[in-house]
Image (tube, rainbow, N blue to C red; front, side, top):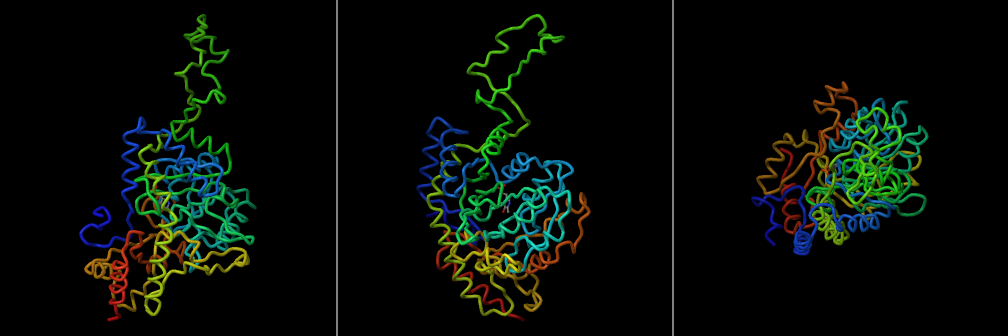
Length: 429
Ligand SMILES: *Cc1c(COP(=O)(O)O)cnc(C)c1O
């Protein structure tokens, strides 16, 4: 199908998979009575909550919005510190800054490239009120250990599972889905087109806490409620003194008819549309197939590239987590909803810069990407918080050697072969 073809014959590093059933679902939504929030939003939320194993799911127009709302409902604000990984997209840290908190960064583990629980514990600061644990590439963080550290200090845990819709890890002798387990207070997911499944733009906040879910629902639409059971009243008895209303206690001002709503908090327009949720529901049905195909491609890469001395394939199974709870926490390749296939390349021994390598691969029709620049090195972070190179050496070394190869379900076997032979033809000079 035409929409599956990569632009200009280049295999991109990531791409959505849109089939005819997705197109039909969107067309049906367009022909319905609702374009913005309607019944498709609630259906998508219910189906997503069931998939993730969470009590509540709140759909919003991006994962960035979901992270912002998570900060708000958890009561994070100015004077608080929020610790996250440097190996993430800027949104994971920006959400803390939106609410006036200080985003801070703790180094990652070699191998899993996720937050290192040891470093987290060593570097804990008394004003830290939340941890944003990001599942890099879709590989789960050591959530039991991260939650133990955060909660012993009274801090909240947000799992940024934007990369890993549908990922699973094992602890306490059973599997747990991202969104299901008790080691995160709130979990967020992204439906940007390069992620596991898409709504064009979109995100989801999931939690087992009904109050947080209700608050997030209100805040995604200006802090407005139309539910009579939660009304507080716009007119109170003492309002009649000294106001323009004095002496005119109009019953109509107190009436709460069908037009009535209350704005109880300052919220935003973070609503998602019925059109997007129709696409989300259609994509959700195919999630197991998307995950299986991503795993299959990753397996082929790992087998075909294992012998290259200058390249390290990602450890997508049995992470080298070097802490005492490693035997309690593990995942295997079949558990991971893999978003990225990021290899580590020794560019020095190839005697080529990363730019040259990327240009060479591109000339062979292979797009690649570099994920991530350690967030604290971004100019705004350096300027605002005084962060410097050297803060998280493992993340800096990872960044210096990282290259993400194409990975998306619509890749044909021939595309995978093309990537493998292009990478293999990169021989040391
Ligand atoms: C993509 C991404 C986000 C932001 O998602 P949007 O839906 O684009 O707002 C946040 N965190 C991580 C780790 C991501 O990869």
